[in-house]
Length: 229
Image 1 (cartoon, helix red, strand yellow):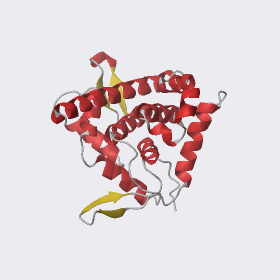
Image 2 (image 1 turned 90 degrees about the horizontal axis):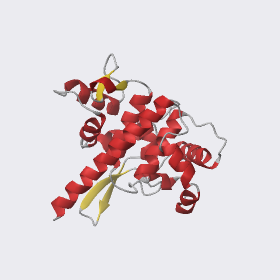
Image 3 (image 1 turned 60 degrees about the horizontal axis):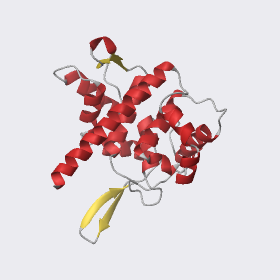
């Protein structure tokens, strides 16, 4: 049974990334996607702000540590960092935490949305996979994304704008729409992804997070390329 408490953005993005039956991730860079979703939600909820008067550094607005484990990770990074951090630095540090995806999947397990299964490969190696137990939450997410993209008259809330933007820039949007549909509605998706259909505060949060995610992905790709050479 799924809890009635609304899903966080990072949980919604993770559901898009997980294969329903196999319980595996459909593509890489999940940590950067999750980190971007965490920071986007904290920005939208004004739990953190970007201080333009201090070179874009992040300021905490939370009075105490949050209960959510991923938000708590972000809180501690900001609180314990020895110098002010900008959004790109914070996202990179958060994405580099090896526990991030496991904390996120554990949240979905606790909600009863996915199962926690130990899978053996070639009778030697084992790995954790998270097949779907309750398909309803993902179906609702997919329906919301499709309606936001296909319905030109749809009133998009800030969270849906942020979700579509993050899903588009990490390619997890393909769990909701086909490549053909994506190409057909490219202009609409780009407008949503850039925050053009949202209010100014939402637009700023979306723009900041997608820039930080893009920068982190480029950096990670370069580092992986250098390691393989």
